[in-house]
Image 1 (cartoon, rainbow, N blue to C red):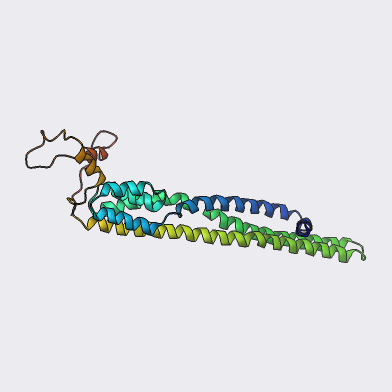
Image 2: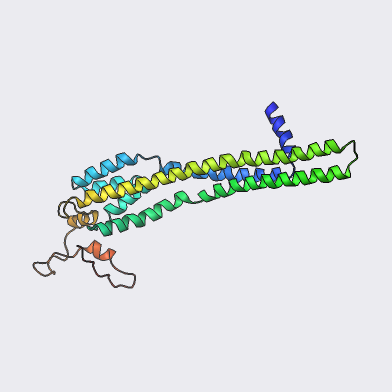
Amino acid sequence: MMFYSQFASFFRDGGPFMFVILGVAVLILGTALERFWVIGRASSWNARKLVRDLTEHVRRGDARAAAQLASRVKSPPGQVAHAILTSGAQSDESLYAAADGEAAISMMPLSRRLPYLSLLANTATLLGLLGTIFGLTTAFAAVGAADPSQRSAFLAAGISQALNTTAFGLIVAVPGMLIHGFLASRVERIGAQVDEITVRLIRAVLGRTPETIPSVAEETVALMPSATSATHAPGRPAPNPLLAAASARPDGTRTQPRAHR
């Protein structure tokens, strides 16, 4: 109870800028809690175990099981792994392009609103300094206009307001900067996990031939009845309907296949 009474006295003596700094503190708290929830959910998965399980499935030639495992992981590493496994590409350039595109999409929500924490923390510091200047100016103006017997009281009140505002601004700013640094490091760690799973999974995919590691799309087509086996030219492989549909443009035309080295 004594703490609350002391804080109330501290807040009251700080002047009008204390309310502005308090509003900044509420914004920092709300943003930090929301970011902790989002980033904490994304980093709750064991990325090292995920890489080990996915590469084991790929080396066994079971791309479908690997894709199903990656789809159950609701985090950027799992989303990037799922994009690699379902891309149907067999060259390292195409696989890295699929991984980079998915990483850009999945990592964007994690870094959203993080710069606001640093901005609000710096704002609290500057508001504290502004309140200091305001308190000292008020104190000197009151000292000049007050009676000699009251000058010491006005001077003490002005200095107390200045120091309280500075202290409250730093009390809000320091935790805000620490929270921003902690959350930014967590996002960087998730980004490193995405890079690791991209490199290891693509190496596992390219470590076997396309005939021994079919993509998920090719496994799906293999289970479907071939409708084009009677119409394609002898000696040439039947066209893949899923890959043909994926390469179709909105205007009805199709993109030309790229030659893989």
